[in-house]
Image (tube, rainbow, N blue to C red):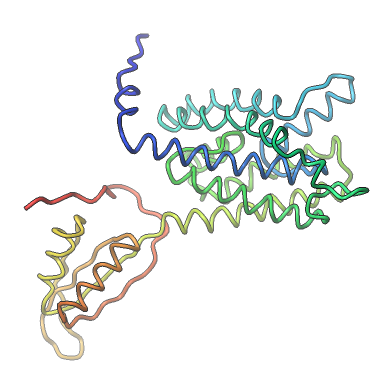
Amino acid sequence: MKISVQPLLDSLRTTKFWKEFLLITIGMLLSAMAVYYFLLPANLIIGTVSGLAIVLSGVLAAFGITVKVSLMVTILNVILIVLALLLLGRDFGVKTIYASLILGPMMDLCEAVMPYEKLIAPGTVSVMGDLWFDLMCFVILLSISQALLFNINASTGGLDIVAKIINKYFHMDIGASVTLAGFVTCLTAFAINPFRLVIIGLLGTWLNGIVVNFFTATLNRRKRVCIVSKDHEKARKFIVESLGRGCSLYPLIGGYTGEQGMEVQALLTQDEFANLMEFIRRENIRAFVTASNVSEVYGLWLKPKKFHF
């Protein structure tokens, strides 16, 4: 089968490609720091591919086979990348290939720049001095990384691929998908860890699902705006011509006055909503405006059209 590289070459010339490339790199650096500094010192197993890599490395070490955790992460990610390409499409897979392949090397970079041994107090196995603080730091860093990458249709690799597959084919929200995939991984920790550490890992996985949902909803948040005004045409023109967004018009009858009117509805970003409210104030438009948060938008949510006059 002939594979054309032209689409990839064309994407290299776009700002979108390099913006996403930078976001993926930053996200994976956060993920690598979270794993290296807050999981490895105490062998803390959270429901991630890094946690599974720690378990497998520990099991192999018991048989006298030494495999660095960073290398094991890369091996597992290569296997899961194949699943991403087959089940989630080329766009998701290409971004995840890059993200997955740099996680292991970035962990090695953390080790080269600042080994965690230098940050741990004598007699402890925790960078923060307490396993629960380590757990919280890991969850926050990893959740930010996951949310950044999910927002551009990529992932941090590993079990995020499994979570995205569950999300796509079973229609579970992404936080629940992350949690389900993670719980199964956490149970493998019984192979190398005592019961207490396994329970800490399970709690951390549950918290990760909650926190990644929070960050994902924050990044994807839109405003559903409803405007009722006699000057609805001014609001409509501003939304369409200045903000470049679509809107819907609904005829209505006032329940109190019995007057006929028109309601304008639109989905806007936070900045666009702020610009709309500034326009309404600046033009002294008498309007009844309601706004609610929408965390996810599917279908024909397009980039704003640019109008030139």
